[in-house]
Amino acid sequence: MLYSGGLQVYSTQDLDIQTIVDEEINDPSNYDVPTEYSFTYRLTVTKADGTTQNYSEQTMLSYYRYADSSYNLNFSSEEAAAAAIEAYKAEVMEEGDTIAEGGETVTYTLQPQTAVTIIDNSTGQVLALSGGRGEKTGSKTLNRAYSVTRQPGSTFKILTAYSAALDSEGESLATVKDDAPMTYSNGKEVNNVDFTFRGYTTYREAITDSINTVAVKSLTDIGTDLGYQYALDYGISTLSSSDNVQSLVLGGLTYGVTNVELTAAYAAIANGGVYNEPVLYTQVLDRDGNVILDNSDSESHRVIEKTTAWLLTNAMQDVMTQGTGTVANISNMPVAGKSGTTDERRDFQFEGFTPYYTCGIWGGYDDNTAQDQHSYTRIIWRKIMTRLHNDLTWKDFKQPEGIVSATVCKKSGKLAVNGVCSGDPNGNCAYTEYFTEDTVPTEYCDRHINVTLDSESGMIAHDGCPADSLTYHVYILNGDAGTDASNSITYEALQNNICTLHNADGTRTDEESPAEGEDPEGTEGETTGDESTGVTADLRQIGEEIGNQLNEHIQGFRTRN
Image (cartoon, rainbow, N blue to C red):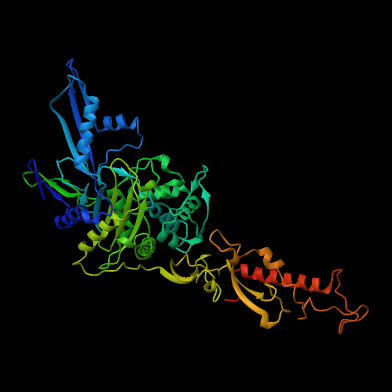
């Protein structure tokens, strides 16, 4: 409870949780990056003629960037920053100039900065809020958690593409997109952070490894209007109509988002799909104890179904155990999360939750300076959440009714074919996935095929190839960008690359032919009914038969399974 001007303000802040947050964000050992110092500066100079001239850190920055565009105001120590200020004063002040009384102030700020919000999943109450690291020097200092917008990066993939695709479009975590080179509709290339492509990729894998191309293709397929609307439903109030484009899914926004709103959006997923507007206070009472403001019941609405929320949570648990969130993973409570990084790593975002709390953290420079690859936001997130849950009862994410499982193929998203999808040369592609009851696949994989080869010719075997020369190989039909060429095969090759070393009767085509005029045993009077040789006709028939078998395969192995 706070007292101000005779008013009693009942805050939602939990002092114990706030203390943990403040201690962790101010612990230098949590930062795997050197601490630097920026500053705000005000200088009022009285000129010799009695006029005044005002200067600031911004005029200082412009002054030096005129000669050096890379100049910035981040220094290795306060002493180095102070020396730079003195050098600037020497440059701009002229003979006869004086500093006006009280006309020079400087405030130093640690860099990079952080912002943290912690929300109770079930109520939307903000339990802790940190607007930045370092000593607080005033009552109305910059609050980076509540008042500053930054780019959300890949955290927006969950809110826009995957929420909408699973909740409204009948897709699932097994839905497959081709992780391959692509461009936006304006021609700009879409790249993954590692500039590699993996080929056919499920939504679960794309969430775990934060694959950009799959997310962009997902939003493009469902429509940017739908993804944009889901972001609004998640309580993001800073969107512009110009954000309703493909880059929305990667967090490329006009104004960015606040840490509080982004954390509240993820708290909705943790709350089974129900969004609660973030609450900072519950009541305000006058000096007589009368309630003049009541915020006990915040606005809430359902954004996604319980089943969708659970599926997204389950996928984000993989983020923590084997994906981009492993550094943030905690061991004393089930946890799910999603990382976000913007161009040149100017912003590090991490949003995650347990069955109790949702915590969101941002890290970066106030002046948007590019950063190297660092883990300090995830380290701090882990430290905070571990301490928060030390004395809490273990609780798992509750699976709602309507969730079922099935064994599917990673390359097609369809039911796995026994002994085929598991035999992919690049690794077992059959795995167990969770679905809503109405999204379970009913068709079988049509991307893998088990081909019988003749080891002597290296070609596709037919009935005339001897049994001791047969080998078996699983191929991907019309392989993608991530398929080794030796493991990919086309429909045409299946029909045309038939073994020519063996005849249909099992003899070899390279054996010595009968002498001229001599009739081969058992062939007198027989014709092929074709102007071609008997071998060619036989192989043509074999090719047609394999083509028919291929068609059966494409139909999903319905009759075989």
